[in-house]
Length: 346
Image (cartoon, rainbow, N blue to C red; front, side, top):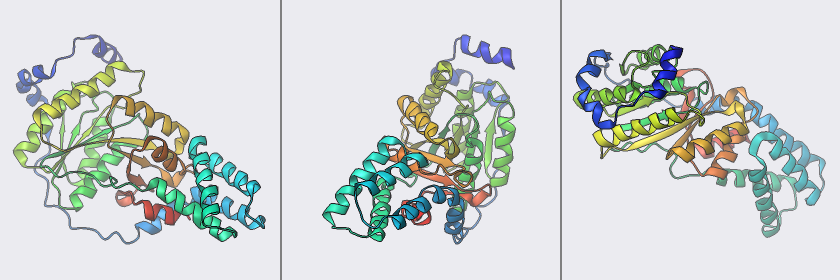
């Protein structure tokens, strides 16, 4: 496998036009699970807010509880209080720039609204953080049939798991979903995605390990066309900005999608691990330079006190968060609701 990895970067990669010529060969390698069963009925959302609240427990202790302690200890609203609050935000992974901006807005709000008590300051911080997270584009734009979701991100952030959970979520909404196993380089990536596809009850299109990822996507597009699927979700290899050949491969995947489905809505979602804190912000900046990101998926919020990074990412990059994960169960990845998030945080 190692030799094949390094040789892949040296060989002349087929142009998008070459994919059509190789269609017969690629199709012979493709395995497809038969038609998926009827979509499952909608499941009630009751209980997710409770799971969200529980999942944000560590972050809440890192931010809100410390804010409350400071507010109780101060008898008046002054510059010393603002400095204490600023330190709390910075050390809770909201980032230096975002924290300074929040405190500046807090100063202005306290002055303009003549806030003189700690309770008012707490509400003001809550309102400011909520405004940072609010975005009209938090929902998926999947108006065409088919529509495409491309999932990207480095290894270990929860890409495969997120794909399975999003597929389950969309199927619960009555959508017919196909997933494309275009991460053909990582060992067991195809097998892992197939397990999640079966759990979610959706189709999967796959080739053998080491195959051209673009050929997998090409065959998956033909599959969704023939089966009348609503959404194609494409897995991709975990790639770092230093792996130039892999970034080029990602661009080739998008060329195939745009050529074969020129009218389709395309969501490009970057998966980030919340436990990595400010490193997640760095990853988002890197990927936003090479891909036109339409949204973020923030995973593992339940296992970290660094959930404040979600505010930093949205504030600094203005990329909407579309899904958050607060657990390992199938329903523990849900569309991001800024108002619910802030309410659970406070």
